[in-house]
Image (tube, rainbow, N blue to C red):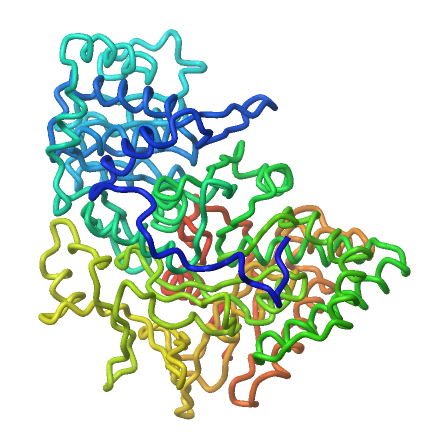
Length: 618
């Protein structure tokens, strides 16, 4: 178990732990090197099933052979429309082993989006998870003349299906076995022909400012970044990871699948998005990467459980977290932790803090990683007080994931750390925009040369759109997105993300959008945490019949106002939020207001709720 004052277990790893210059070369070298060691585990029907490297290699080989028998050629694209399951990884590695291009589609995307992404990427083979995803594909099948086959992972409920263009994954594997029996070495030949400069994957941006754009990454950039990650947050074959974020997002594709492929860390797949809290306690990952929304949810769960605890338990927690905070403060200041404080922390863990860690499922975690969106510094400090180092990384789809990272030896909450050793980072002297240059930077946007030219300048610097600051130690801090900075009617520049992060630290707030550009004062649109607010209402006898009545109740309005008052105390008067309104619709990833990573789309929300916004300024 990690201790903040001894971080020798989180040392960067600079040597090459697995040879290969393309993703399929890495994978097949991993199979040869690791053989019967377990690589992946997935829980189905209450039972965990393990996949060794050899078993994974057999499945990937058969699927690749099946694709070749269906005429899948090098350079062609196959898309995967599925939740995060082992079959996603098998399909991805099979496509790459054929010299193809692999593209992921969010399982929450509507049929119209599936059509756009398949058409834009010239998809020839579409993998779908089950009957629900197959329905979307069949709805737009007639509009995709280039699509040759739809491959279904799970055929439950589809046994009687009679569609000539639809085939099961099991049938593809059977085709592959027959094909490879007659074409021995076909997969190895395709893998050998694959070049580092070849396009490997497409990762479509979330489309917050228009249609999604297909970011192109070649094998060279992916392998380079996987090796680079080990110099930030090293892991090895003894580590256990939890695979649960969407694999079509760069965070899980790069930091989960490919990083684990390179290092040999075990990938544990959750049953479904609803069982994450239960599965994380079972898996108890030693290395845990998640987005701020997940860390906020875990914190809220502990706070709610604490309210139900006895006074003695509450007092034990208060004392224990106080000791942990004292240690965290010393570690952040670069001071030594005394022997007496270490003894106190051992007691604090025994009487309270270990229970909090077990409740979340991070009791074995050597460290946690947060990224993909800004996080409250107070939340980072809370996890540190539990004794778990939380390291913030920053990057984007276009940088192949992390481009900066906080080192374990110098944790600074609120900072995204210095530039990763594998790329350059600097600020534009005129605008303060963060620029990145390196092999990890993407090739450009598919079919959009003008957008590519706008994003990558003649000197190879990627213009990220994030505005930041850098301190004397070279640590960067994001202040906001260039297009999100608010200038009030009084001329005051406000960075809304700071206020929004403070609001999201509340267990009763899931997300918030601060409004105020060219306005006399700031207001906010707030999305409540349904589970925690419902519990508050039940505990306090607040009547409600549905989500809308819950948000409209005077008691809930007062509850959120109290959270707003807490946040406002931390800011100057001109930066304080004067009014708010609560979204009355319970949103999910299927709703247009949310990105697939569950972030509110600022521009869309401002446009959709213009009437309510105007009402706050009357």
